Length: 240
Figure 1 (cartoon, one colour):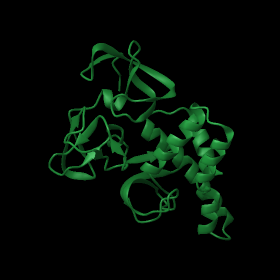
Figure 2 (spheres, helix red, strand yellow):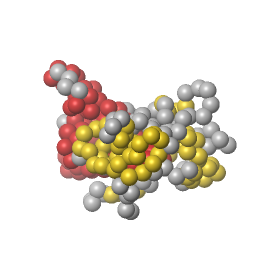
Figure 3 (tube, helix red, strand yellow):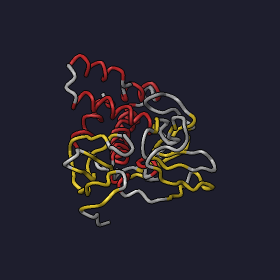
Figure 4 (cartoon, helix red, strand yellow):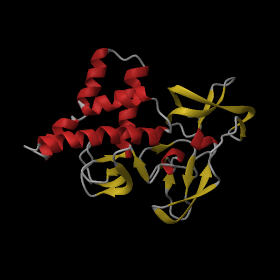
């Protein structure tokens, strides 16, 4: 799909926004979520929009909510704080909202692919988990990606938490003790797999390889187009 080099957007009416690629994380001025890669930017005002936010259709449908019609809003409707039904995070900015059912989706969450492929394995977006999430250990509601073999599950919300913590460690110049603290609070992938598959070294190794690939492509899906550096660092955090 060819992107327009410049667009006009109602959220920033005074200047045109130009498309650019960045390898430095940014905060989208539309949805207020993290982003990297392709974005639309006003250099004069330091104003950034995710591609998904800048080019958001007025209405969308979603496979998980077949009876819903989601309408795009630049400010959340209603008086109270709204919560994204995909990741469980607050919705302070751009949102897709179904007035009939009350569901809300961040634009980037609404654009998450139903299937991801890292070249060796397929991962499928599911509405809720019947097996524990690798990071938090919980089942139940919350959008997640599950491997085709069903041995690896990861909540979208957990990936966002990893991104936020890793972003802080890398780009906000936290001291080494803080970085180590972040690392120790991320469960060990290898340790978890060993607990699940005691005495089965080959299966542990295979699960670790699957999980590492899963994390990278899920990060790619959430942020749109992350750099290999960020994906590798966050993958290293969770894989130790």
